[in-house]
Length: 319
Length: 293
Image (cartoon, rainbow over all chains, first blue to last red; front, top):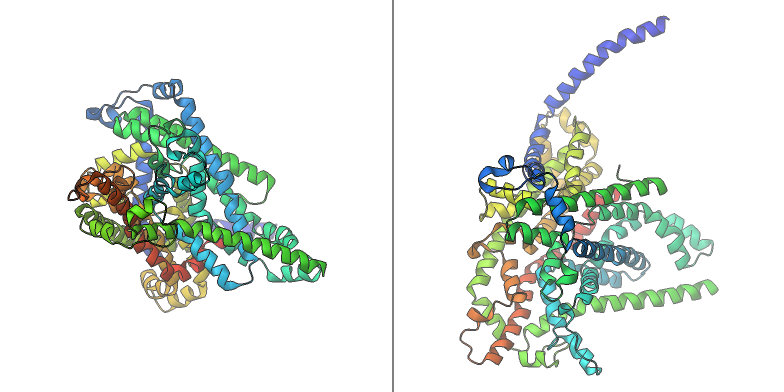
């Protein structure tokens, strides 16, 4: 009785004291809030303010009326998009390009990191790393320019090779069938090495004693790789996968847009390029915002789904 | 004995594949470099496949006397310099504040930032905001809409919280050191690798960006280098003014090809040269930044 009474009487003052302590902590650290201020203003203006503009998706934008004054049209913009003749094509293209990139582009850096980790010669290892990071710094414009050069049906090296072997030159960038393979391959060329950095970092965090113990027990390099290294970086892999899936619908606009031309457009029109054309070039703001919102929602759904799966089947998740 | 044989086999396969990868990655870059200084006739006949043939600098002469390329260069330098400065300041300040465990409301702020990584209004609403701010067709449209990348901020935050010991802060606070003083005099000097990566990551982004230029800029004299490059490489818009003094159409076309190789080199070189110097920092910095996050 006595003890309980004393704790309850002590409790109340601490409650108010902790809140005043809280204020004191905020006051003493007021500079930290000033540190946060530029970033907060930035995010508010350029990330949250556009969310206010999302209402355009449900409106018919009239420039003189502004965002707020434009008349509501309900789901009309969405219905128009779903009913339009190219809706399925655009959706399928977006998914094919992104899932194709994920399928090949995601495991490749992991494999490269595991392979590099087994290289004993540190000079060779550094050489491979340095060279394979380099394409990451080539701009998308230069990359696509290089694709045009190498794949040119008249003078491109690839086609000169095909001709030398007696084949017919192929106009790679003019054929819809080649669009996705070219997109994925160039993606691999450019980001394979760079993508491996994070896994190499994760590999260095694995306790070397475990590997040594396995070697003493007679495990081969391949066995060590599969039984120690791979499980060791699995949490990193899972987190990277969730992040990647969480941006599944967002990536690639820049390269897709540059690689597009009237001949391959059947496979090359994706949601983001469509939004750009309809919205900014044809000024159908309401409709384009609706298409963009559809994309963002789909993307968000993928993220939640990936996080849910990972929570269920492994220990790592974003939240 | 058996074990070492399988290991040997593994090494052989591993090294072969890595060597192959090395060649596949390096080859296109070397080819572009060689082709840019070779006689265009030899290039289009397929005689150049690794080393330059009949070295000529005509392509570069044309590139370096072209006004739009110089303008693009100047603009890109401005956007990259100003943009990167803003990026690094905003990112480091924010990352540091959020790395402090005694910051009240830390998780709430984090959530506020992280949400923007996964849900965005899309380009139309962003365009309208930029338009409403009245910064279309100005430098600010190129540097403010991407003033901070949340991922980089998280890398910075992780770096600070793992490399700056709490005892240091406590000791400094006992000596009456304010947060600003502590950040400027103690945290920053200890964070050179982080600053180097941030500069590299942001500078590369600005240098290589063309999308914001495409949607926010309409005046050609403000175009960044990448947009100029796009016109030359992909829209084939160079011939008219760059090779105006060349009479034969076929020769004009060939020179045009030379120019294409050259502009790829000229536009990529600054970044490719910068990167080996920063490399030793960024591998370390990204490692520290990524392991925990």
